Image (cartoon, rainbow, N blue to C red; front, side, top):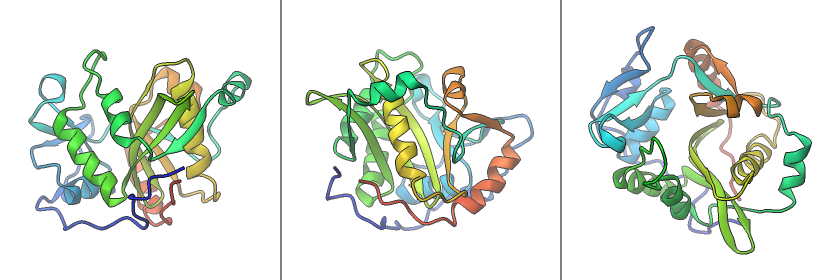
Length: 231
């Protein structure tokens, strides 16, 4: 199930006024630069250069930071580990795609969440990327209620995961499993799901920590893969 307003293929916005693609990270810093804006062209230029935004102020407020982690958390094709318990949990949820993008972002931005960083400005910027067909949500529903999900940006063979949430056990993992099914369905080995920083939880699901140079090299190939049609 998908939102008919999300275009395919995605609409290319005007180019960025900022030369993010020319930035090069230093060996020991995740933070590459600060400033710029969140225009659609700027965001896409950032993802194509291996960067993503997160504010440097309190709770993600400005100034904007542009990040390239060392190492990078990556879920490669065939790497997802689905335990039997997760397979059983899948049967208890309905998966929808792009039917509640704004709600997913709102839940991910819950002010009561520890370490929250998604500001109203971020929500508006990614809402515009969604309208243009670049940003997507994968949602877990139960009994008509949204109980888990994730959102991110898809550019060619890259899915840059931004955040996920759950209000019922396993709901976010079920959404991630559904994303893997969808994004890797064609078997193209160039496709990458980027999770930014790996956690123990994500590593148990198959996420690996790649050196930044390996990620940036693989990113160039991933961007050449065809866009995935969500929904």
